[in-house]
Image (cartoon, rainbow over all chains, first blue to last red; front, side, top):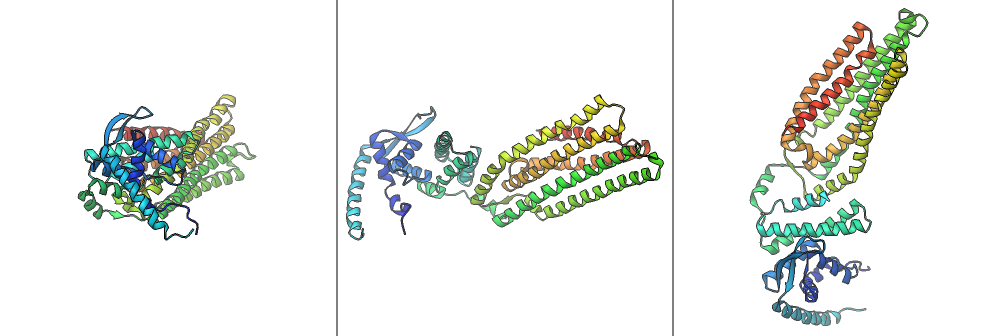
Length: 111
Length: 327
């Protein structure tokens, strides 16, 4: 059976670093971030709206990101997010965790 | 676009409307609006765009759980007393309403056909050998009347049958509850049918306006020719019949969706007003028919007796518009 979709269980654990990665490039807001994710993933993955905002809530609660109000591309007031120093450290640790996960799991995967 | 807004309202309906929740809701609306506009700009259809935006919404429980918000208790309790309407019931209700639309439309058209037939036959009588008092004349007058009676019986039978069909779903007049997924599906389907509905209303209105043409033309071109007058009336009635059929058949279908979604004319306040209009209609139209028959028989002038219908029709439309607009 050929896989056509990414496993949502696996990627759910990585929605935080995915968003942080984009925020390290520049501050951004909801729609812009979900659009970038789709573009970088080349349409292979689309983050659901509720998953995105759950992540914003969680990241903010943990102090990894901060929000402020700014003007969106279409002139509407939007909530922008900015990554904090704590967030950058957390991102690094998630990258290391992923390397380890990849290393272990790939030992059990036949090409 | 309205569908997206309603969808979002429904999703948030059973959750406490705290400041934090409302803020996220408005962000979500902005996101979904941007996404929708972008897809429209790429050339996607209204339905396609709405469908994709809704399918990419996700799961509201996940978000609320993360925000530490728990569901409001009260509406849940209230829901428990509501009758639950499932997909199967909703589908059969829609089917019945679609059938009723066609039946009621045909019923009205049938009565109009009877009136037109009677008018034609009675005015044709004068032009045949022997005139209206000859044997053939009497036969024609009689058959005109029989035709009208038969058409009225057929029409009324269709009305009663439709009414009993719809009566099985009487409980939809009270508050009821449907699942979110069914609500979404119904909303998308109503959206699908919306342009057909709009076109049918426009066509119906155009037909109504055009229906004046035959009568006006004859009154200018052959004002003294009774038979031409009757032909013109027949044409007018045919056009009105077609318009009514369009209004009723598409109207009933739309009504089915509005009723199931408890929107439009089916909020409690509007339901009361519809009752008033229905009551007045049940008095006014039989009186109009009585006047029509009396004048037709007594003055033996069916063509001018017919005038009562368009007059009452316009007055009645004005009356219902006035009742509906009263705040």
